Image (cartoon, rainbow, N blue to C red; front, side, top):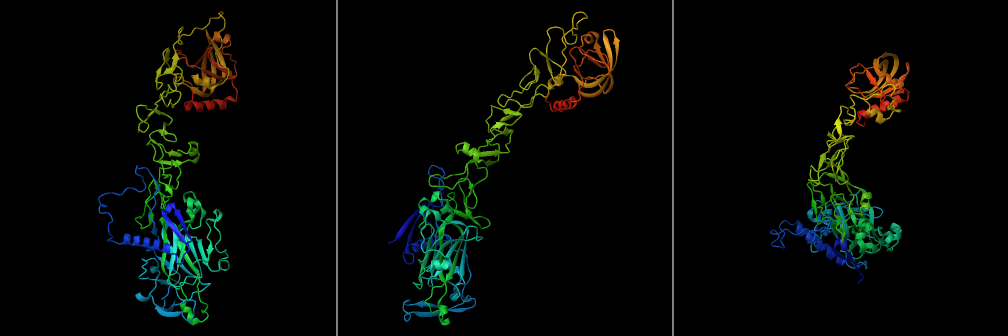
Length: 618
């Protein structure tokens, strides 16, 4: 009668929260759990399956097809065998206490049977270890507080579960009358902070400032309520307080999708505070005070080791600490995170529909570490968000799926091969850069240069001695070594000297200097100039050129055509090619050379071109 059955799927146990005196159904459940614990802790336990040693049991975290599925540890009494710390225990020193029997409503029919509590005598002691030992109804053992510790002084029981558990119930079986007021607390951080779980009092408003039996809605599902249930003085012994963590919580039927309730049932420690004794009103007489105390025969906490659906059992590590035996590529004491290198999608709690296992990053065997990126995960349609870190074997990219700069893909090997990327090996002189096409391996060649690595001259070109233009076009007319100069009277050729300073003009020149014209001397067809070289910005190694006074030769015909146009005492920027067939000491200029009046602003530009040439950008 009055039973509310809650099918709590994550616990796989049907809880019956019945408003019956003594909580009979919970009592049966607790005894059954304790019996299972006893069998597990007994060294000579019986074997239910004679072939158990011959066959390995199936993994509960995998279905019959080997696919991941949600798995949860066994339902246990998490308090069984655990140490309970009590703020008060009788027998230190020895003291008298009296039990009440008979009809509690009739003073004359009530009987007091007195005993001695003495911690030094085994048969008379009532230590806290009796709270979590095997509860045998035929041989009841009780922890007991000192007599008459009344409000405002409290008595506290503290139980550490050793790790996070998802709790279904907390029960207390009393040897004395149940308290008039008490609170059950929980901690999720191993006793550092406490949150009320449930209040019990015959005067909720007066004692705790809370309404009696307040309605629980989705707005206050994670709030402790106060009730006057289980607070009567009757029965005088054997009474039970049973708290169900999910009873009356609206989202209990959709537990998988309720983070609020998942947090609500999670605890590492339980604390029970007894605030006020139940009395018959005769405590004013000191002779009757030894009849009032707190005594509990069984302290049970039913639940499962919290593993978020990613483990079927909890085990003790080398240090004796209890932790989940995580599956589904998860890690942590509660399987609350993905294990290293399995960050392709965010960690999630397992549900009945989806195991939500952690997935390894796809790094094509070229990386050992990765990280998760939520933006990439959303852009991929929630398929993958892993980003590989420190790609090896000359690979790069989010999945180490292409070759890094300076390498190209070897199509004869799979992308997972250690040598899937080959070096470009671009020729230092023939190539205009070090980066090749990542598919074909073709290096960027300079004009007139060909080959995969730019290591030979193309058809119609011949090799030169210039690192800037290593291959020059083969001329069809007169060779460069014997140029055709116009004779006086044949007309002037077109001046081919540069009109401005550019990187192209700088790079194709064999020398670039800043100099001043000091004097000139006519020697037949040639004019010999004496120049003072101020700055040498560039020169080929074969050219003997230094700062200071030098000689420069120009044909009379070129001077007459003002190619180049030179004046004494002026300062010029001169650029041109080296005449290798000229045996004269100094420079030789012609109508193709550049001689521009010097401008001071060119200094910085030419220094910058110098640096670019050193960086191979010519």
